[in-house]
Image (cartoon, rainbow, N blue to C red; front, side):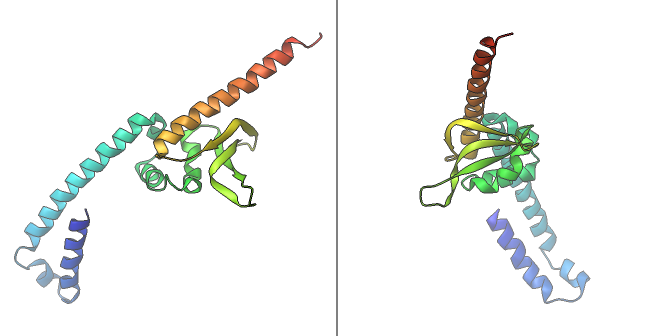
Length: 166
């Protein structure tokens, strides 16, 4: 892609110096060059779609995202605060995750301890969770951590309810 991009920019540098559009378009070999760039861009686009499909197979909730949102998540996966706006698209009721405060008083940008629902309800995770590694891998681990946390909370609730006196 970078080669195509630089080739196109070089072509446009020549076009800027000429004020007559017909002259710019009539340069010998320009049409063939543009057609060749388009063909190579189509190959890049196909490769990108294949790459995104692989990521969707690893983390199926990516199917709920637009291609632009998915590319943004993958590009910013090592910076978890930047992917937070897309969590609601991956998880129906989840709006955000709350990052923990570190011992030095700074907010972590990798470790979370609470799920925040779209209605504002907060549910603590059973243990702090680290958002590190490939985004699709840590989101799969997050899904399991969320399930485990809810299972523990519900098991405790059932146990307490059994001991209620009626």
